[in-house]
Image (cartoon, rainbow, N blue to C red; front, side, top):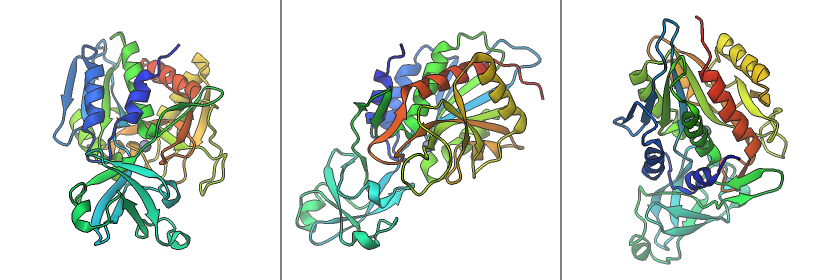
Length: 336
Ligand SMILES: [Zn+2]
């Protein structure tokens, strides 16, 4: 039985894009003694290398999961103490309204809205109420430029499903760490476990990480939206139906050979999987794909219902399938 305490700890860490240090500290602690080399680059990515046994057929495989989460940034403090915000990454207004948020310094606020009918998906109509009624008082706690994020406790639901904030992409970080723990160095490939920053604002961290790693193969390890609940996304991905092998990602064309190998790996090892198509958004596959002289990419994703909210839902069995797939896939010999 896989222990989920680490995933719980990761989801509860505060880590809005560009401010990932709490998440980074947990991951660095976990990496201790597991790798041949661990490095934090200039913009905060963790790049952890586990060498394989060298042969003429070895490839450099970069697995990328992002540490950051979506949130809000303060753009103005009003005279009546209300705090106006803008988005950091993609946030649905409906996922924020009438809910609590937490600033990096621990200040709590409630998100209100002056005109919810017209709020659509811009944050201009939203404000954060931290309990202050004057600008002067509010600015003792929160300043222009400060960030806040969701408060999303961990709950166990029925049928192995779990709910919390930030499964996007702490689920991916957790899967990388668990796959690394299973990598005993007998792998034919050198594996770079990359925990990237700033994915939610345009896959920026994986860009500099890929420039440094210069991988032969890049695999994004992320979440993808569930489509079986009323939302403005459509498709056939479903929580609990297996790890999603990404076949469609608007930000990157997945390499045919790598994807076929991944499907074959699931079939051979009896790993539950589903064919994943995402028709909006993007992943770290995009920046790895266009790094250096071009890199073949693939992706796997945990199907996530109510993503980018304080209470997203995933299934433990999908996480476990994802770890199995990462383990077996990275141990394959790739010929190209
Ligand atoms: Zn993500």
